[in-house]
Length: 115
Image (spheres, helix red, strand yellow):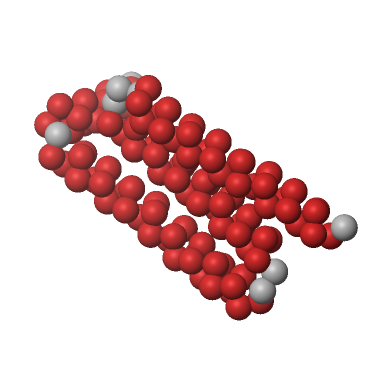
């Protein structure tokens, strides 16, 4: 009986992970602005990875496999947002249109605060 519960939980988590990955792909295709696409990809990948690895941890049942997958999850949760942040910084500093837009917006906020 517990095998079926374990299977159902794993299947539900894998489905949630696939939905998250599909939403990330749809967000990358739908959004026009680079930063919006990058945010959709980063959040979707991180959430999808969490659900898939958690499903594998539940389905495994072996202690060493759970520990290895947990370490993989921790490693990916640190590296995926960091790489997204570094890519967004590169885009910010190398895209003159984006750099001017953000600077102008920042200057308008500073002028509003002074008034």
